[in-house]
Image 1 (cartoon, rainbow, N blue to C red):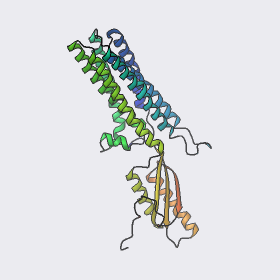
Image 2: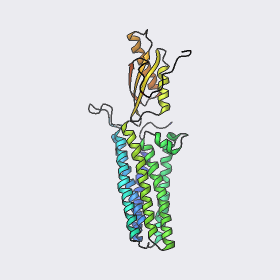
Image 3: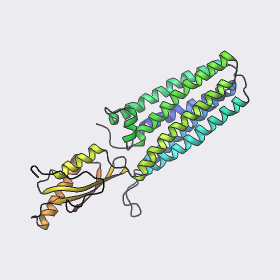
Image 4: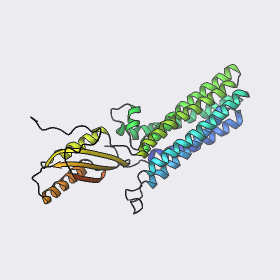
Length: 318
């Protein structure tokens, strides 16, 4: 069963690896004059910075509710993941593309290419290791869904951000190796610059995906459809409930769900019986879905159906 809290383990592993890799890439760039190695060094620096930012977000999101923030600070994690996306786009993608264009317009030969290949090989092992660690952490949340679909429905950036970053890093290393090989075979530094541009475009694409997910989460995403359906079924299972007029959910954090439900109770219930039914429903919901931290139940009518919501279930023979 997946752990119901933001994960910091993959970020710590990635931070250690990226810091060492960045230093090695810049040393290789200094010895060889390769623009794609500069781009890769910037990429590793950006990844290290992002690891720190996500750790800050995970720590801040654990803050307790306060009078100023009665629903807690869970969305801090989504804010910091948006900042990470901006850093990847500007510092990572922007600098890599700029370096690439500069070397395409003013190509220069790459010297001592063995330095580059050695650093790329070590980097591939390090990034591949952190990618495996991150994917293992994400796999329980992925289930049988495709990787892309799992990222789209995930509410926890700490689970998929490292997968995106290290996946991009591994692809970027392959692009860099191809660019360096083409430069070595042809003697033209243009291919080195083109590889740097390709790495920059890859980073911009990753930044766009992460920014899109962060925006959706900041706006307040509903729970997954299967969770909503299960919550509705849990409420309707109570013997004093005739149906659910509306059921609204919103994630206040990866594992902090708000539930607002308009319940049609039996008309013959007394006030005390209605209160008892509400308490039973709350206990049933918290047993089956502990991530639901805030429950608001209103006694209403089946006529008060929310716009766009599915019609409440009909009793047999109706």
